Image 1 (cartoon, rainbow, N blue to C red):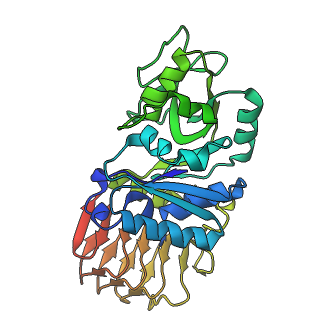
Image 2 (cartoon, one colour):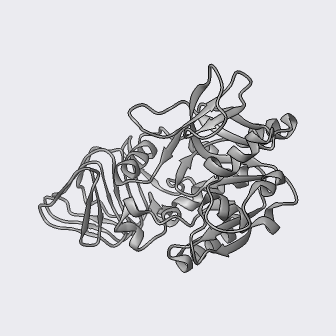
Image 3 (tube, rainbow, N blue to C red):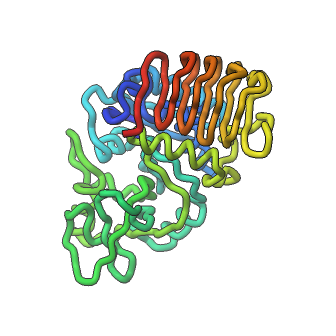
Length: 336
């Protein structure tokens, strides 16, 4: 299951047009990247929940699942149900076997095969995929004991001595036992409520620690950082079969890519940068590192682009400077 019902308030106004999992990242929906991780792990059927812009999210999921040959189940939440309630809404789809759940707003190039295998072998009721706590971030901690059992989540749970704090990636592997600890209805959090009940009743929720690329795209700054990481080769694209945004692109110098139909017209490009289908750049424009120019977008005369996103169809005005900003139509969304 990919959780897709969030409001995405910190990414407005982009999320006035797209739910977060459907927002384009280097020209393809974030949903595609996550779907690739699941398909590579052997998943053949995917469920999603919708709430915000449900028809947009459904259309995106249907197109991407057809593209990757996966079956799709969709449940709509007229009233948002939280992460636990979202999973509960797909109980009939999920409860026959162990299953994987992903947050829909992350970019996480992870091999799930050994994680699922270890989860099954452990006999745990659930496994949370964890990472070292990111520097200069304020994410709530998942605390483990020496046996890598989860004892406290965001301050909730029985706790214990000598616990170590870790960062939750947004990926779980669950057994059907989780459904026995869910409320019959209403909004519910899988981590802070359902898992805590399970732990207090003596069931094992494990932590599986990995070292891998991970990004939360919940803010403009994090979105731009994920784009920069992709352009600079920090994301292992070999793990994202069918979701490589540069597939079919032409190398422009040593560092940049362009779709065969993009027209750079001799503009100065430092790169790394990516120019999508039908993009045009005025010969007098200059493009520095970390820039993406979307399909059918146009960069005007003497414009200057730094680390930025120019989304599909957007026109960068003559002489305009875009650095640490997302440009969408007439909107200019700063990273800050």
